Length: 114
Length: 115
Image 1 (cartoon, rainbow over the protein chains, first blue to last red):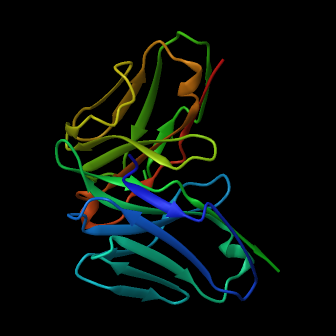
Image 2 (image 1 turned 60 degrees about the vertical axis):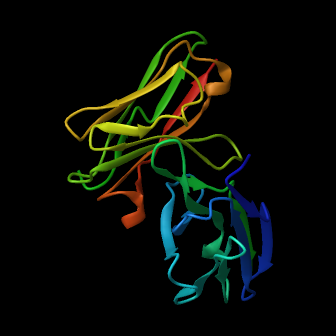
């Protein structure tokens, strides 16, 4: 089954509103949770990450929260702007046959209208 | 180079042909990853190299897929006897150490179309 589930798959907000994207993971040993942003036709780029010893991390308008007990983490974008429109991917380090791998969710397409 | 370089950027091939995709990571990065991105899908993990060794090959979709890395630098992903379902963007990424230590830097991707 899927190791990382991401919701919603699409999200439309008005400029200035907040956007929240949620992910769940299956491996209780996961300890690293990055978020990547992929603009149309471009490569994914890291926007924020969090490790398992921290419950929340903030960087300007972006914040990530982690609930290890429930095995879910969320991305929060406040005061959204049109340039925030992109596909956002969550990821988690997942234990596999040999070592671990960074497994991504299926992505959330965020559209911010002005 | 300054970033992760992939070639070719676009490849159109006929079903049944073999293809090779190349990734040149950022100089000094020991870890290298291959992901596949199909239309509307997420980033599907394929394989990960630490140095020249690949501790986890279980993400490769079938035995038609193979990858190698030599000299701790350039990596090649080979797809034999391509099928239409192999059509996707193949993304390579590198990081300074393992991914648990920080950011993955992605290349622009190689778009493969199998006719």
